[in-house]
Image 1: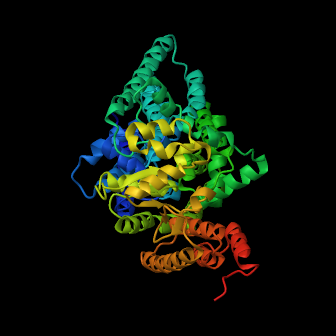
Image 2: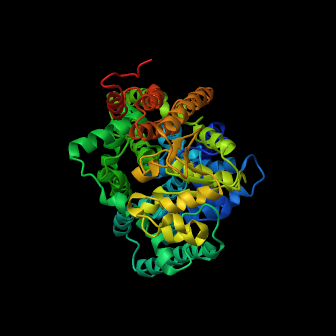
Image 3: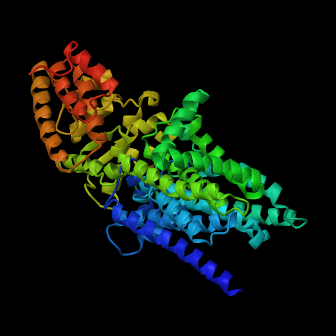
Length: 603
């Protein structure tokens, strides 16, 4: 190999390795020390037990992260976060290699541009929030970026690119099949443009077999685990019907049925604002122009790359998505990376094209640091990375309840984070194995009741009520309370019949066999409010910037007390939620209901 060519390749590989290692170290520095918000505690628990997380089960993530969990390094959740960080960092390291396939990255300007944009992509909120916690989006990002690299490397790898792409997509389908399906249009266009020749049919058949076998093998692992009924699983697929329920994600058909059609202008506005928060206005503009330029000048790869972005946006564009939801950013990780590739390619082309004038080159030289500066400012201004990386409020609230729960009590949860944290506490941490836990809100998903009974037969009498609104049997709750304590999480799902038997308690609602008197209710509400205010003071010492659990539980208490006639105590609970989210229109509207138009309860 030519000495100069070898030197250029070494520089490129050093740049890729440096970017990947820098991203990896940054993620490990910011990684949550234990579990995290949203689905992380559920995913960590499912990995620990080799169980089944929420549909479609995500077997690839659990099987691979289980190996990471065997490494005796730090707390168990941190090992799973380490796996997520490693997936994202490896994908970040591949971005300079993809950029080199688009335009030779050999000059100082090209190395500086590609290196800077790669590091900025790695430090974006979209990537960071999926890499500091156990989440399936980090593995999907690695799948998507690996697919892009293989599509860009067809001239070097030939038919091997097709076979390897099939293997990678097979892993993707085993991890998050919804997001992976949206990669297929780009892959199909790539197949049409790649011109593999006469052997393409045979290679395509072989690749399809690889994908099929990987799918059968991966989901067979779920089926094999069914009879073991691992702790805290969504399902025990002991039959093909149960397995189909998990893999097809039928539990979320209700959500899909509620898709809100967003007009194009509103959708584009929300998407544009979200990406400007990630890459800055110049990064978004240059990235979009670069992707269009790639599609026009290098259609074999540029067109599939642009389609990856278009269909990636389609995964959420059809929903009226919440841009502050970290999972939404997980969906858009590959688009952030593609914008970085597009912007880098465009600036390198402007600066180093043979026919470019000095003015064009100087413009490119000036745009590069300016784009990086605005990109960095956008990331620094996005408080999600700063605020949420230290988030551990879910554990604070969970542990407070577990400390106070009576022995052998029944714990009925309604908020998914409370349920997931309870699964994790009773699983990997082996806390309070005496508690019997029932999560009621998943009853609204068809087929869930059958699997609750399969794992916990003693809960069957409680489920003899309408599952469509997550009701529980009053007589069964009363019978249970005759044997041991019953604690219920405050929530909208508490029915009118249930409220007649409940008192506000410390950290939960307390079931009473006989309907309590008004005096008993008032005394219990005052004591619960005092304990809640003390807990709020304790939780605030953790420097929490986002108090999802505090808001959720405070509103749950407020609604319960409002409906049992204690408006003053209800307003006291709600005022603490308003301290965390003072401009929330729903909270302000409820406060007006409770206080006859005042914004705060009377002293």
